[in-house]
Image 1 (cartoon, rainbow, N blue to C red):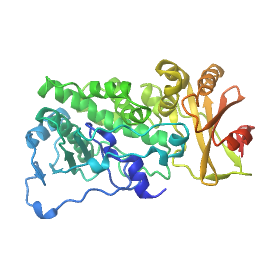
Image 2: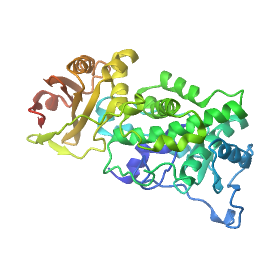
Image 3: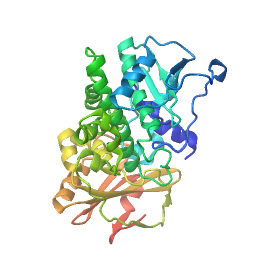
Length: 392
């Protein structure tokens, strides 16, 4: 997959009204992107360290006041930044079909509202803000969210900033780490909203509403914000303690969804024997509990999807190809036999919502369930054996 495609799939600006960090190379979310350029002739290098400079447009918000309020909430003391006013509509795109797991299992593209304000923050703490049709109060809320990201960067709160690469890290870990970053920003923004924008809906409530009412693609986006916020809310009591969230932080969405749990993924080694189908590299690796929940939900409903994804121990996504058509063996390991029973029953409902892919669920042992999905010929002939070998 090219860097350009990765930008489309994982572009931070999918975040609608809530901001996003680091749309630059080696960010925790994506390997490489095209960062928006800035007209440097509109700026000056001789600016006060604590100031915020707004360039390339105007804002109906006092950016310096918003910055200082966020700085006070996190009890920080760090240099200001530059806010670039920019139309980010072109970043509000996502083709999840470029990710084989999402395409085969029917995870839709998110339904992005181009009229919503949007923001993103780079790893050098530069903020891009797209006001769209937002009023001053909502725009201030988005800006506050972005300024929390500035604090995360300036105060060096997040140890993995600049250290995660798509080639080395599973989708599950990327989502877990991004959930902590965005959940921290939502947590502080909620405190900001209570204190300075009391007539505005809390950002966490808005996100929860969007997650509940959204498509599977919307839940991929909003789930990281919603459950990241819930984790942070359960972990600290004050925005001033935000940095503590990133000490010994979870590497799985299972541990984000269940604050206080520190389980490592269960052992799971997968080998393949390619016969008719060619194994190809996957950008997914491990999808984790959150994506498992989202994948099941359209077929089973919310409550059953939540129950069927709990007890997740580990998983591996193995992608095969024949005549440019991708198919998948999704190998899952569960904490107990009962957990595996529940997932297997739910997984057997996959395919009820689509007639474009074939599905088959196989119980390999007490704690291992394999879901074959994709072309009919793959699903009919692929097999799983031992602990665990996939033949296709």
